[in-house]
Length: 184
Image (cartoon, rainbow, N blue to C red):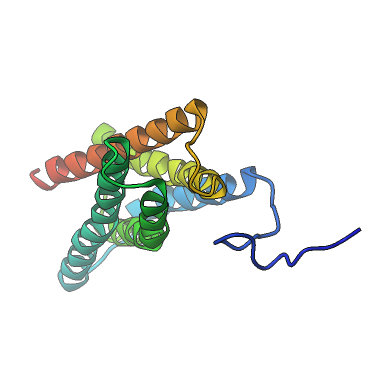
């Protein structure tokens, strides 16, 4: 049997496959820690102001990257971009999206969220949905990359549209609820 070089295949690296549920469990565990810890954290006014700045900067970073990716996806659907361009944009914004989401989560813990409020719970559920959906988005990205420029099958297209829709719904829900909570 011939063994190929496992470090490079096409334009991406292969990784050892771990069960799909492991990253989901990690996200659920982290989300649960945030939910249980946040109400008990007390911060000074100075730390609160810094956390608010980090929260807003993380929103700009993460949601801005999501909007960039979804705009590129729309341009591909309208045939203004090719598939390679869309996948390349997805590769480039992957890290800023996760950094933004992580920054929002960690700074949000320091902002004194009222986890007993239904609106805050809705926001936290939207964040959880965005994070788990991000795992699905990575799978879609890998499948699009594996097509090597060929037209994706309809099922993959539908999955990509669903992932983008869930992403937009989650980010917008969290953003609007966060804005409304800040007005109280």
